[in-house]
Every structure is written in structure tokens, then in C-alpha cells.
Image (cartoon, rainbow, N blue to C red):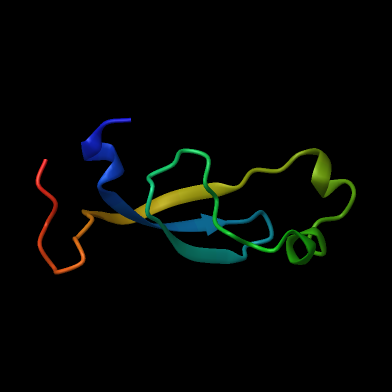
Length: 76
């Protein structure tokens, strides 16, 4: 992964099949990160049939380069 990719913070929206929405941020710009939702809470929203075929959508709402501890932007 390039430094340019690592230095971004992504704010995203995840929409579950039942219409519930989760807003979060990903500091690593990982392609397989879908938040830190609690599995037992999500499981309550899915029937056995729902579990066989569903789609979760992740949309980037915005991104910016990470800022260092003292407020300066990282140089790359």
C-alpha cells in the first residue's frame, strides 16, 4: 500500500438490507473494513432466509489526508 493511500481518513456510510445505516471512519483505508458493528445486534435483524443472500453497501462520504499530532499535514 502506498503512503498516499495510508495517509487518508475515509468517512463512510454503510447501509444494511433492512435500511439501517452506520456512519463511521476508516483510518487505514482498508478495502475490507465495514465498521465495528456488534454481530449479535446485526444478527437480530436477519432471518434465516435473509442470511442466505444479502448485500451491504459502503459509500465514501468524504476523505481527507490525515493530519499529524500537532496539526501539520503529513508530507509525502
